[in-house]
Length: 233
Image 1: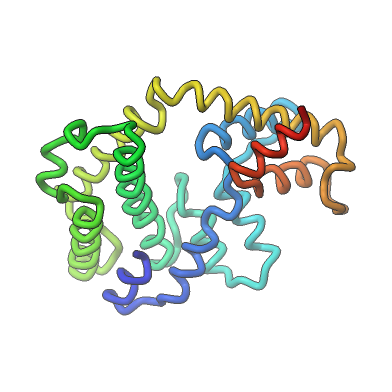
Image 2: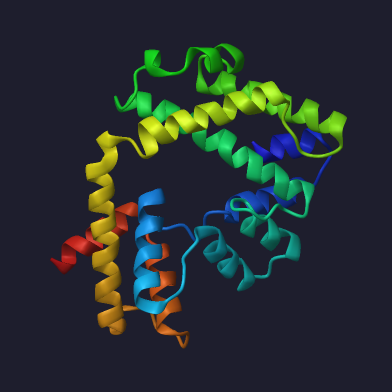
């Protein structure tokens, strides 16, 4: 999606692709629940914090990437704004992508029904994920071209933020997912404690223990983390 927007605005497609591919390389398994669990564990044990964008940036710095790619990865979320227009595209499109794909997934798996979705926002953006993405992309391109910076029109931007708030309330942090969140947190905490206590389980590295644990744990997929925890018993 970012490439489409960059192409339409005659910006650097390769830059947005590199930022987009790298933006979540440092993300934990289990999404927000896993990130919060690792942040709590690292804070408690090592007195530092964990943020997946900062971890992704740390990975990017070890590769042969430009400053602009690193900046876009670091600032794709959080309070700091990207320095490049390409980074601003990825920051905005990240929300466009995950909100709409997550709505489709939530309906597919029965977490939401189509009638649950807010009608006013769907009336403006479109009834299906593909139509909403199309509406949002056209709005970003047209509004940004007129403004000379990456922007959404007020009405479309507010509708997207409203959908995002709905998803946080009903899906990401809803009561029905709390058992899964508790399980995710328990798995991350268990793996963290074992890896800290038994660093021989970690890949060989001369970095500090905190970095080695964070690198290994945040690099896991959901399935790998679950399988690893099961093997530990």
